[in-house]
Image (cartoon, rainbow, N blue to C red; front, side, top):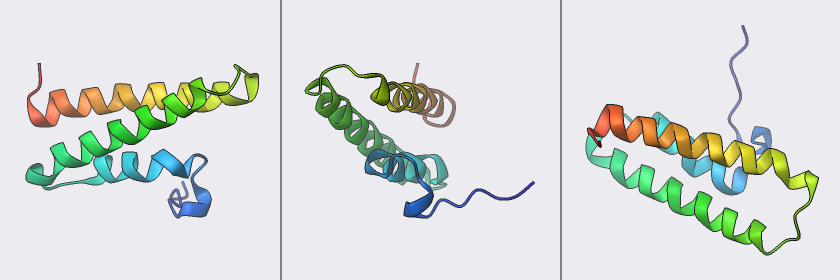
Length: 84
């Protein structure tokens, strides 16, 4: 199985996926919470930007990807940072 290339050109939604990926890959617990908060903020900002655009099917995959990312960040916080 080939490794995924996470260079900026390979990210489908680099505006928020870089911060999300940084949170997922952070090994230092002291930095993890900051990275998670940064990723959540970047994703929420993008969601706010999409709210300003009339609902269109072309943004549905990105919205779903952001929902999935936020769910993964919640799991990360619960499992690695002992959030309830």
